[in-house]
Amino acid sequence: MDFGRRHRIPYFLKARLLPLVTVSFLVGGCLDIPDTPEPKNTASSVTVYAVQTGSQDSTNLRIHPESPATLKAVVDPKDLESELDFAWYNNILLEKGATFKIPAFAEEDSIPNRLVIKDSEGNTASIDFKITVNSPPTFTEDISPAQGDTLYGTTRTSFAFSWKAEDREDNSLDYILELDTAHYYVGALEKIQQSGLHPGTHLFRVIVKDSEGDSDTLPIVKFYVVDTLETKK
Image (cartoon, rainbow, N blue to C red; front, side):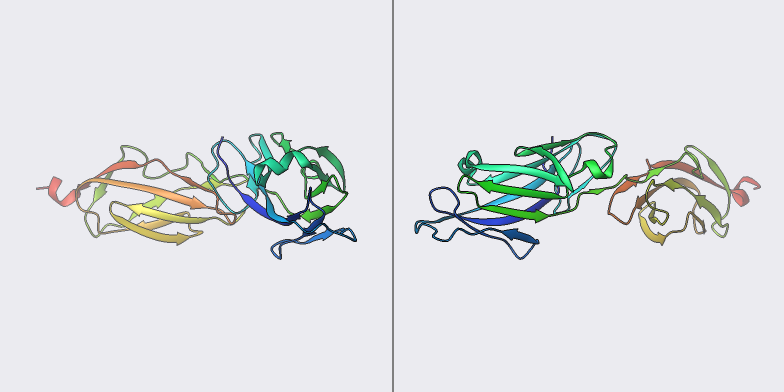
């Protein structure tokens, strides 16, 4: 499994266990501080990772719904983990422990949005976060020209190129067309006309990206152009 989508949460100051807690400005949180913290403190931090097979590293807590994922609270230094209690919440307590398993196609209210960390002295830090569940876009088979097609015309002929992708959450997708060695950002367009193609073999593919940054790439399509003026000679 790949580590991905990490989210820093609070800083702890440790005296014997963790009697003093401070929270990073990167996230919201609340804390309880004892009246008389002991003097010898060493700094530590906790980072939440969303781990999912096939995911790439990211600072975003984003997962795909089609496969299980695991949330991990990773303590630095690691030997402090056994001195802490972890509780995952979404309005109610969902589970305790340093990890939380999210099944495929989990309901929104079954995914944690808050982690409460507690030490043996009774000090707690409560941090809110959000797990984004997003399906990547996928191309359909509505591609033209298709693999191995032959197009007839001249360099002045405008040939139609079309494609289509679907996304469970997004209605607006961005496309990039790669035609031979050229790259064209075409935005939401799913069809263009292109001229200037010389006789011979050509390659094209399309990359699609949704608003969350997930993407899909059309396999390379090889097609051929035959000059109709040459064939008439």
